[in-house]
Length: 368
Image: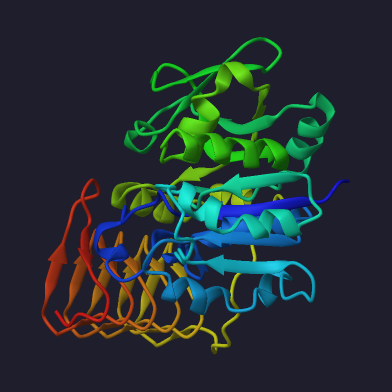
């Protein structure tokens, strides 16, 4: 198959996870006990044969750089190609571009150097283990300028209210984009585009002072482009709010959902970390939970996700909660519907209780 270039555009993803994105971009947020959100997009790309990936990032990207490093865990530590994290670096005095067009304009070399004639562009808020090989085959077969990737949502929730819907004819030709909640065909913010069309759209957007590549260059030029829709047809999760983050983390405690995400396709790759197995002390009680390596459990844990290295003292209770790396929970603590970011220390006797619709969130490195 023809080579395909990958681009993860984080420029328009602002701090959508409240306290969890105080110190990191959303793509670097821990997810499902051992992963980061960006792992799903990166894995889908490399599992589809992509060997060159650029990441447009705007701010708070230190954690992202620390997580990805050379890209070796995703087989992207290559002499040719590999992964490139491209922060804002505007040095062109004649540059008049705005919004995410600044990234496209100032990183034109990345596109020109590549031998690929097509580019897969994605954000990081749609989490699925769905390689895009079939979508790429369809894109080449139809000769489309752009192929947008969609998923069917028959039971919309709050997280879907912000997403674009795709209007199409019987042949999958895209006729428009809308916000119609009755339309189940939801855009995943992933699309494949011919490289020459991409560069032409960049020039058009800059010339007419536009500031959003997809909305102004693709949606705005819909009548001039041949755009096809491709249905991803598999389980996926939109994480674009603290509520959807909480819901989908705990949703993976359902064995069927976990298997459908992690075992039906290829591996979701992530940064390796060597930790001893979780240790359960006599008297501990753990039910329906995801407990990662390095945890030491002495109290009660129910329906919760514990990342690596969490310590739960005797007489402590953790229920319906997400506890990130190296948190310490002392004696007689009660946590319910809570999200603790990394390195939070909860002192003895504390009670933190949120609701399932609005979990109680503590930013990282806090002492409560």
